[in-house]
Length: 120
Image (tube, rainbow, N blue to C red; front, side, top):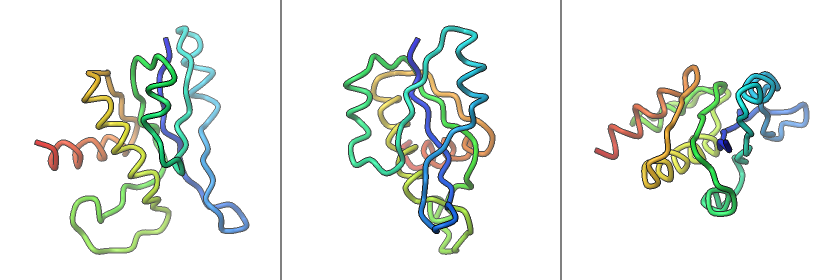
């Protein structure tokens, strides 16, 4: 089974954003025969990964806080990544369109709440 997974965005020591994913996701999910397709946060073509690979589900991994702007607040929040928010929103849109199961980890279940509130 092939699952698309989002990645956390962190600032490195050079103040540049980088994608990363804890190794525990891979080591745990591989025990169940699940392979991961890591979706980059800085890609302009998220649908490509869903077209290129036979993805059967989506995991929104834990990590960054969701931007308060996603739910109408005009507040700056440290550690928030607009790119990650946009990537996960696009992943949710594709999952709904293709009727794929979605698992939201930790705080990123909040992303689903914002998505569903705005979508329906």
